[in-house]
Image (tube, rainbow, N blue to C red; front, side, top):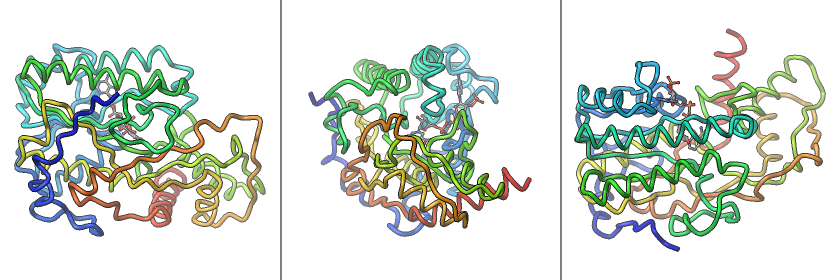
Amino acid sequence: MMMTGVRLRGWAMNVAACASPAVDTQPSMSAIPMFKRIVITGGHGFLGQTVTDMFRRREVQTVSLSRREGVDLRDPSAVTHFLKDSKPDCVIHCAAHVGGIGYVREHAVEVFNDNLRMAMGLTEGLANAGVERLVTVMPNCTYPGTKQVFREDEWWDGPLHESVLMYGLPRKVLWGLCWTHAQQGRLKAAHLILPNLYGPGDHFDAIRSHALGALIARIVDAHRQGEDTVEIWGTGRPIREWLFVQDAARAICDFTACASTSDDALAPDNPLFNVGIGEGISIKALAEEIRGAVGWKGAFVFDRTRPDGATKKVLDGKRFCELTGWRPAVTLEAGIERTVEWYVRNLVES
Ligand SMILES: NC(=O)c1ccc[n+]([C@@H]2O[C@H](COP(=O)([O-])OP(=O)(O)OC[C@H]3O[C@@H](n4cnc5c(N)ncnc54)[C@H](OP(=O)(O)O)[C@@H]3O)[C@@H](O)[C@H]2O)c1
């Protein structure tokens, strides 16, 4: 079933014109959005803060919307008031109730309900405040659990993996809500689907961390405590794609820049775009990369009684790369080094 309705041809020329250089973390001048004021939901979260910093470097005014600013996305009237006051040209939705796989399993009801209510609060608030442009970020767990290489046209082609259903399904409902608002002419939205992120500012605690952050924390800890082994759940064979958070933020900023000059980018048919390059790494190889960056000499012990999860999860990002010219600028090796360094300086030594 194909419902993504990606409208590519109409705006390919415009988007190519605002593509940023492939190997530069800085945008080209033409990738600076004409939007003057952008609301970023979750603007102090891991991704949201990096997106905020990048927009500010591009001299775009941003305002965060989250509970830290006293606005709960589950409350449509609070969202409406905030958006009426801040009058943004566009909203970028980076807020979510999210955590590691163990956390979302233990808090399945709260995670499902909160993300659903946030989706409803957001779309209702946008409609009430008359804000018509929205870019959302979605996790790759919104794809069917049976797929290994994720393609936009297959987003609806099967059930989600049950381990992430409580998180992925409300995000798909958000797509549906945007679609219904678009049908009534109130909203133009696009959805950027991201692989696993990592980088400075990531979550490293046992509850919130994803595999890479958790591995860094455990390997650094083993190094400091003089331990010889670190246990890893499963066989170490599953392959995952990792994107440095600043590359993800640049993709979001560049896309928003394109959207500010092309009416078709945030289209009524609610397009999806994969932001990735389809290259993954096994958990074992990832752990070895981190071991090298930390300088630890110990060994990994694989607990094969624990589940592996999906064999492979990578994003086919050809559409997004071809249209925007975006490519990740930071290699996994360099990104891990920067993340380990940040973790040690900010969370261990301090
Ligand atoms: N991290 C990854 O590896 C990854 C990968 C792919 C996609 N993504 C997507 O990127 C987005 C951001 O993820 P993240 O890792 O940056 O998450 P995060 O660090 O946990 O940030 C979440 C943000 O959401 C806000 N928030 C939570 N509940 C809220 C509510 N009820 N009302 C208003 N704001 C609320 C939080 O602020 P307050 O607590 O102050 O409200 C926080 O700023 C999510 O949509 C996620 O699915 C992340």
